[in-house]
Length: 307
Image 1 (cartoon, rainbow, N blue to C red):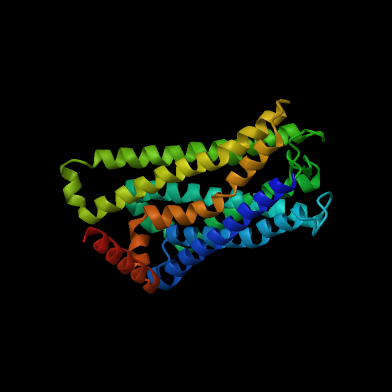
Image 2 (cartoon, rainbow, N blue to C red):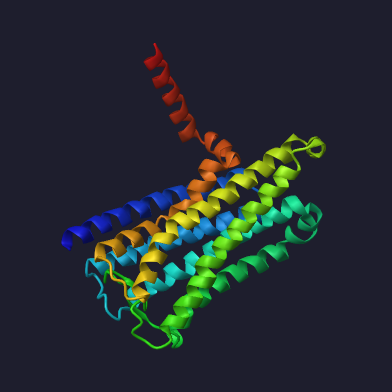
């Protein structure tokens, strides 16, 4: 068990460092390079700030609990880390869904998007709704509908997957429906809607929209696709393993530990998706001196190999 805890802690620390660096880079690009307040950028910035807070506070607290800096059972730190994890994760999921839906509106109904969705009031309302929605789900167990208990591998606090308390089953069903299944359906819908719009405009009308508009639509299509894929890949193992326990199907503790660890990659998925798959962010990355030096060094190395 000590070896497992050490390995788990090392992986969590690696995720903390990677998430902090990538999200800090993304925050820097949006604030100092892009310098725009479009709705997708505002939401991406919000998700990155949340991920930094989540990893530096929530993940660090989890490591402290594992190494008995704080007691695991009935610990404010333990429950607080779980509360923060659910709060930020759910709000980030909803922000990702809204970004994808806004992309659908932007390419299908551009005038409506410009008039109503680009206003500061709309951005504030949508952000408030996302954070309220994220705050609601971890807040409910504190007032009787289910309770916080030790996770299935007893390495952190989580929801009552063992159904010790009355009401836990109904809470978990509603939680999985509104925080897992519904976002997947919404992301798939957004991808299908964007793909259909892009396909419909691969005609003579496409030329009338201009080359830049066509490129923008393809960027939207790619980001919507990878949003759905990454969300499904990252959260399905933990949701599946936890759901099996509800039906009294037991698995080794190491399975729950690996699934929980894998779900923590959500803290870096936003930054990776936008820095790697969004070419506009990649272009700004190339303008940073450190990356310019790395690119030049890489080219020189390749030239030497060819010679």
